[in-house]
Image 1 (cartoon, helix red, strand yellow):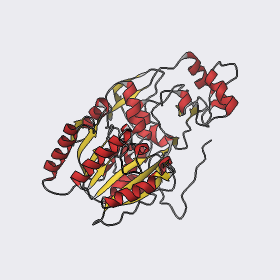
Image 2 (image 1 turned 120 degrees about the vertical axis):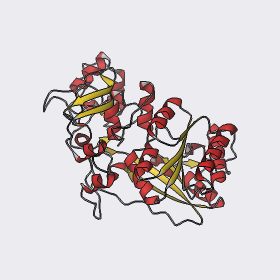
Image 3 (image 1 turned 90 degrees about the horizontal axis):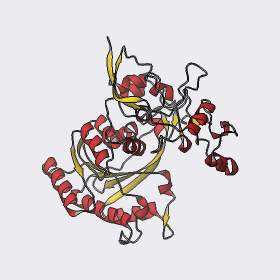
Image 4 (image 1 turned 60 degrees about the vertical axis):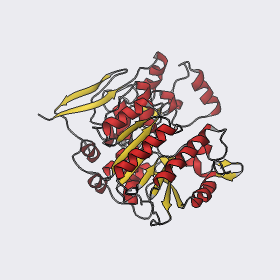
Length: 395
């Protein structure tokens, strides 16, 4: 008998009004499908002003998901409704579970989340998809990394999948760090990067672990809104304090490369009339680093999700120039690939650990989730992209 343990396959509650809305929305539908007789001031405002097609969206089996954000417990905040609307079987009128969201984010099934439900929404929604991090890790082609602002460990997991030694993770949120600590072999460090004892603990711990060798990669950047074109001298902005302390760690460890992941808006963001990215290029050049940056599409690297993120790579002056990885696949994995074999759930249903008898996988992606194949075998199951990659319009 094939017995398998599934973690965090749990759903949240829905109000009576929200449930009426969910029932009315077909697979691939959204707020436009909600009947006028269902009272909702928010939906009324969306109807009057227009709104994103992802609001009150229901997933579709045969397409990748939209971006998983931190509020996938709210039907109105994105495309978070389970795809089974009843047209092809018994409906599941509910929001996606923690495990379903984690699978769509490309967390393997043995990655277990800890903390309160509100914390787990943030942990999963804020995470770097491990398969996207894996692509960056392979392109860097190094072996050691320290993850600042590590969250639950999506980026760390991706680098581990690529064979890296994740030496340490620093995080302010105790619940997120608890998840990181129980899923990674590195040293978890809880605390505020602005505090001198936390910085010293991190720097000393890393140097001891490296035994005199240089750190390959320092990952994790503070909010780029706080970046000062005056050389991080706007100390009144608490986000700039994060930068000042981040730079102190960078100078102390002198990594061969550093990595910052951010939203696409970072490339158009301005501060004092100057593009933040241009200011970063100049300031990091003074520290001996050349910057490379690019927006990546997560679905092109095996993540069953339309997620856009910018990666900024700093290469030390004595290192080889960095080249971003080419797309790995041309046809994305889908919601069906990711979650179709998970047990049925209702509203506010499920348990933290579920034992499933006669467990079966329905896709190569699900094989990978349980460790039946490695990442390269997963990606090789899809056609490699040619000159142009597939563009998808869901709604």
